[in-house]
Length: 205
Image (tube, rainbow, N blue to C red; front, side, top):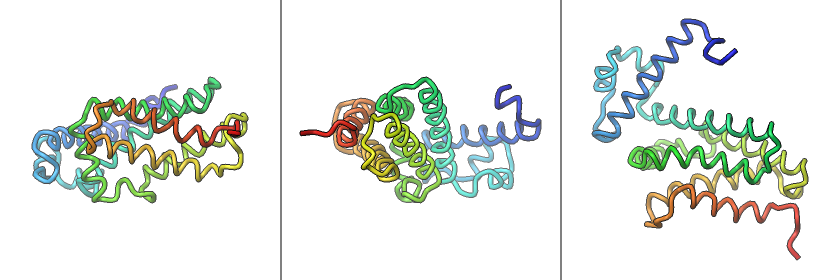
C-alpha cells in the first residue's frame, strides 16, 4: 500500500491544498521576488482565503521551510533505499547530496532566493527543524559506516554528521557567491571527498 493510499480523504485534501499553496507561492517568489510577494497575492492566485493560508503556513518564510522539508524527505527515501541495498556509505552521502544539487541546479534563481531569505529567517541554522532532520540522517549514515568498518569509530557520529551538514550548506552558499564555474553537484562531491577522507577507517601513515 502506497503512502497516498494510507491517507484518509481529508488528509489527501489537506496535502493537496498545502501543495497548491506551495506551488503558487514559489511561482510568485520566482517571478516578482520574495519581498514583493504578499500573502494576499498568494491567496488570490491560489483561490483560497487568508485563513486557509495561515492554517498551513504561519509566515511566508514557512513556505520556504516546506521546500526544505520536501527535499529532506526525498533525501531520506534515497538513503533508505541505498542502506537497504548495502551501498557504501561514501556513495550514499553522494547520492543524498545529488538529490539536493539536482533541484538547486534546476531552480537556480529560487535556490539563491532561499539562501538569502533562509539565512535571514534562521532556516539554515543548526536548530532549524529541517537542519536537525538532515543531521540525524547523516548521523545514521556515519553510524552505519562505522558498524561496517568503512569509517573510523573514533569520530563521534553526531560530530561527523554536523561537519557533513555544515559542508553541505556552506557549499550551496558559496556556489551562489564565489564565481566558481563548476556545477553544485561537482562542488558537493569534491567537498564530500575531503571530509570522508578524514573519517576513513584506514588511517594515514
